[in-house]
Amino acid sequence: MQTAKRLDGIGEYYFSKKLREIDELNKQGKNVINLGIGSPDLPPHPDVIRVLQEESAKPNVHAYQSYKGSPVLRRAVADWYRRWYGVDLDPDTEILPLIGSKEGIMHICMTYLDEGDGALVPNPGYPTYRSAVKLAGGNCIDYSLTAEGGWFPDFGELERLVAEAGQAPQSQGGAGGPAGGGRIKLMWVNYPQMPTGQLPDRALFENLVAFGKKHGILICHDNPYSFILNDKPMSLLAVPGAKEVVVELNSLSKSQNMAGWRVGTLSGAKERIDEILRFKSNMDSGMFLPVQLAAAKALSLGRDWYDSVNAVYRERRGYVFELLDLLKCTFSREQVGMFVWARIPASYADGFALSDRVLYDAGVFITPGGIFGPAGTGYVRVSLCTPVEKFKESINRIKSKGI
Ligand SMILES: Cc1ncc(COP(=O)(O)O)c(C=O)c1O
Image (cartoon, rainbow, N blue to C red; front, side):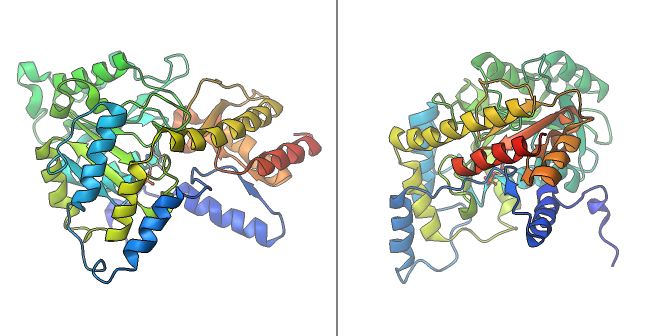
């Protein structure tokens, strides 16, 4: 059967393929330690599980749910945004619960991109931005993040990319862009940044909002890591006037240890939420109510919860630093989020070569940075989602193989 053209250039997701290979190695008795994927290995708070159990035992919670999500969850998201980010959101009109933030990336692209429309994507960045833009028929325009540039976008480069797309600033009537489509309509941004672990600052966020306003570009901020190893979570929506040009995705996958539950949120102006709901309501039929009520519980947890999660990651990160030192990688100890991003030594051609060596010789999988875009080629990424014992064993295996 001939697949649709929209799948041209879209491969199976890297991890989906790699996990199959690791399964094969395990069947051969290799007992691979997987330090690749960012899926929390710890459970959610016990109160969250209790709400799910109690609610799912009720007889009247099993029907289809509202396309806009439960009002209880929307209210919990609004309270969470006010408490931690200082952002006011109307729970009735400015919040849309999602079945994980990954689906939101696709919905946003499908809602705004016509064939050939441009979307700025970070290089390196989360691979789903790229594939969602392409699946929606859009055109990915990479912007570079470099160690020298502190992993922040270079606004000079962004201006050049917009000018190359033939797009005059809005003040010069540029919102329409070039005739026949091809206009840059979206920019994907993600801070704390994955994979580089870079924190945002206030000036960066203000510059992004100003850039979006200047060119009529919707700034799509993906914000799943703001609580991980960071005690000052920031939202792009906290910049005054941001709602005019910003939508923000958030997730319970990482900070609430609920990756498999599939709960995320989209926040933004009422008009944007309504537009994206027009697409999304044709794709799914709501989320299981007990999951939404348990998610609301998770969002009400206090500082103790985040401190306890971060104490675990902080201890593990110490071992990851040791492992990366052993591999003669160089890295910043200031980075945040669920991974450590490290430059490989010159003795390896690229991160794929180092990853393969460690996998095939020591049975330890670390992610090659090249899967996040060409700018990640000289890097590897190590996940913190594994118990300390496994890090110790990884270090011993690497030492014993003399890697
Ligand atoms: C940057 C980034 N955005 C979004 C996601 C998806 O998260 P969710 O589980 O909410 O779909 C991930 C997951 O790895 C991620 O790293």
